[in-house]
Amino acid sequence: MDPTLTRDANSERYERTVPGMAHFSGTGPKGKVCGVCAYWGPPPQRLGEACAKYAELMGGKWHHRVIPFHTPACKYWAKKNAKK
Image 1 (cartoon, rainbow, N blue to C red):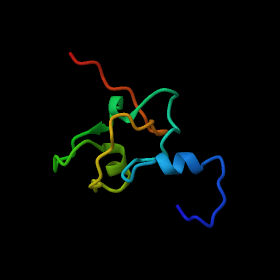
Image 2 (cartoon, rainbow, N blue to C red):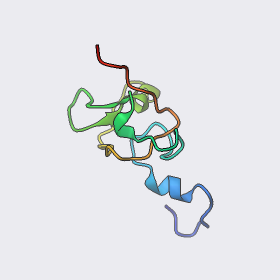
Image 3 (cartoon, rainbow, N blue to C red):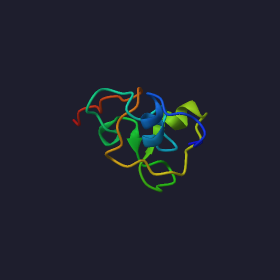
Image 4 (cartoon, one colour):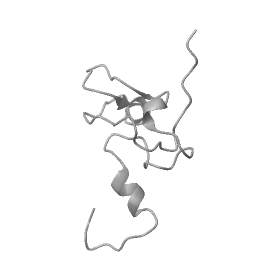
């Protein structure tokens, strides 16, 4: 973050957001984390857990960053389907 900019209500969200997330951290449902989102999981390269929604929004390109399980969810958070 640019130190010359003043802090505002979104500064904390910006600082918590991990590169490769589909949207700002903490903009999803209260108390939800990336690790329980339907979009969170290993990409084809198997470099660690990443965001499939980000890849979708970027035209299928996966980001190389791992998104930690406990990262506060973004606005695209979706409930995982129940296993059959």
